[in-house]
Length: 487
Ligand SMILES: Cc1cc2nc3c(=O)[nH]c(=O)nc-3n(C[C@H](O)[C@H](O)[C@H](O)COP(=O)(O)OP(=O)(O)OC[C@H]3O[C@@H](n4cnc5c(N)ncnc54)[C@H](O)[C@@H]3O)c2cc1C
View 1 (cartoon, rainbow, N blue to C red):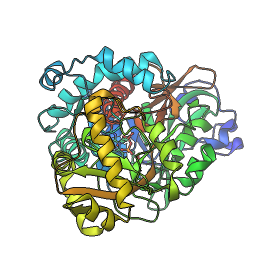
View 2: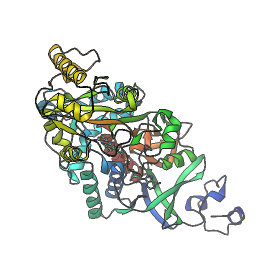
View 3: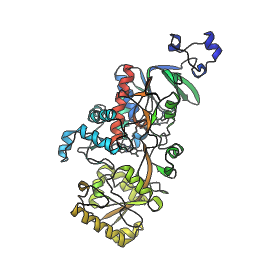
């Protein structure tokens, strides 16, 4: 690092912007004396947001690079279900519903208690169908049709052929190779370098490579696409102490340090206590089944054998209701039609669950209750009552009429335990409509862009199921284009 005397006497090789006459850093000791590498655009993180930003920047003519701290690319995008919400009129028509980007935006804003920025939400919902086309261009193939993903609120979810977000990462990595976009794994960003901590341009990043610190210059921009922080229990419980004991659905890279680097260069962070949980492994379990995606077939039961929440409610409503149940452990229940329908998306996981003791199959509800250890009489009463609701279309718990469409009647029946897991952090760096990071005074930080789960201010208090994958590819492409253009 440069010492103050060397800088003031001009003895050191200065960063280009300083040498060319822009203001000296308030603390020059935080600036490197020399850059180990120089690119136009440096992208932090190789999930969907980072890969799409890198590809778009590279195709716009920028010398771009993607840096990933883990030994493999993909982040949460890789392990996700891959469901992407997009209002595509012909798919909606085939599903028997109306849809449009405007309706998608309206529902997204309402679901987040109107805490999302309407301009950013409009970009998301208009951009989502374009993201599907872009993903098809880079080699992703989709299953036909749309469905309502868990927490999705409307049937507009598109799933890739392989039932997983790994389809996106495989396609992006192989497309990157084809266009000569470098993606370096085992490169951990440990700081963002700005001219002054609270002013001036972002010059580049500090990178840890094989235990050594390096300084990499980005002449046009740094794109932060480092994901959320649900795998960081301390950071999550700092903002929401109820979540301390829960498991997480996230891969180990989702630890949030890049967000703190953004804050260190005066970046504005919003909504950090909006942390989403979803049904996944129950406390004390390592595995789970997933028969709640096609939610019209599924009911949730507590240890007392009763339904306790509208299964199609917002994710935050389900989180709060489930965390209040005995042992924070509940059960998902479907009949064979529900099992088959969910297997269109998650058959591998559900067949595994039947083997590893997180899903049970039985020909009668009595048998099922015994296997799962639920009170049989109460369980039968609950299922009978639910089937009656399908006739009356009126649920005292508030399940919508649209989701009261399938009775649970056809053997075999399936049930398995689940709990709430930390899943998605809605808060993060505040960006503008060009994906530029704003500072605490609401001004653009020149040279710093962000996209994906590291950002905040889009989903509000509650992220709609299927909207994150739509977000990362839409804002990832936007951030890549803005950084390459240097806007
Ligand atoms: C199990 C699961 C299922 C999901 N299913 C869906 C779904 O079906 N539909 C939907 O809309 N959403 C889903 N989500 C949410 C969605 O997958 C994520 O919000 C989204 O993938 C985040 O993408 P991203 O590119 O912003 O971040 P990520 O894909 O998480 O990528 C960020 C990358 O940055 C890297 N990184 C972090 N810090 C550093 C650092 N210091 N230096 C270098 N690299 C760093 C990380 O290691 C990671 O690889 C799911 C999430 C999970 C966990």
